[in-house]
Image (cartoon, rainbow, N blue to C red):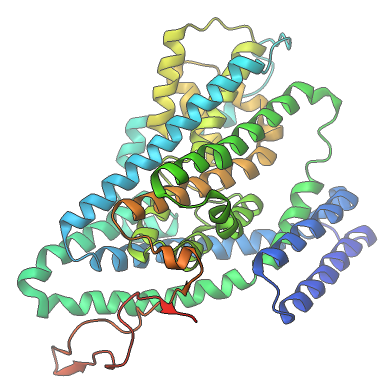
Length: 478
């Protein structure tokens, strides 16, 4: 990256936009409005900057790095806090099983939707491509055998799992610690209860750190949007087939995000889809710009608890799970549409049985896909390899992958939020008063609802003051 006058002008434009964001924040404007302003400002900056947008690339990368650095600690403390507050393994079994089934079921719907759209619009038809014209060595290096995926769920190094943001091993660590606590608390409550109190304290600290990062989101959106637009304006007219595929991906993601999820919310959660999407919009927008389901977790869980009314023990369990299981955008819609596009473009014979196997593979591979940028390429390469399809399909679609990832990630995050809402309704942990804005959510986890304890060394652990609201009880606003 070199700083010439166009690059300096790009930086100046971003700085001017930041000044506007700061002014809007001073006027206490809604976070979603400010984020939309940032998105709208980043588009023309990227368009006019073109290749000079590389001057602001480091800004977006720094933000994503910092955001991802919070993912491991956030998942650990959120899940431990949520599960320990359940009080019983039976309740954990109910929430955990329901969450996994809803996430995988949503992905299955996305797969069927993508397959139906592909049969109707026949992407890739008429391309008459020839195999062997594109290098796929890099793609081959990203293929994961399913057995390797399963083995990777179980960490050999706890610190290494956090260092690499391996979400499923972190979830397993958190669940193991929490289950051990629940197994002991009924018989040896006085000895192990400080573990839960400590987890709550650590959660408060981690959440405070995350809140600092979230405050920087609108500033980062400007740089991230400019970078995506500036690096994507050179697709050219030779990509009409790929652009058609891109449009189909966006259509499929939009249908799943809003139409399919509207039916699910109305039928199984009994909430207004329009109100729900309005409340969850900040998470959708952040997912759209950062292209990271895991990185969006802080905003997703906050909107679920503070705006939708999902109890923290569900929100902090199902949302993180949804960043690595299901993921219809990256692990369902994208691999299916790539496969059908390649089959049509390269004239490969494919039977109904082959398509059925392809559907099953997409569902299986969706278990353990990392919620980070580029995960869709890994999942698509893994599906193509397992289905015996050429990896050249994936290599040919790389030019549109970044743009497609915006819609894919928004779909993933929305699905996780919808699944959390449905699970909360089914286990009677959805507060309609918060959803209807008759109450404000008050996170009272700072004051554990436990009697005073005496821990080793005779250090007393204070109980909450008598006048404090009960744990997680929303405050009624007149």
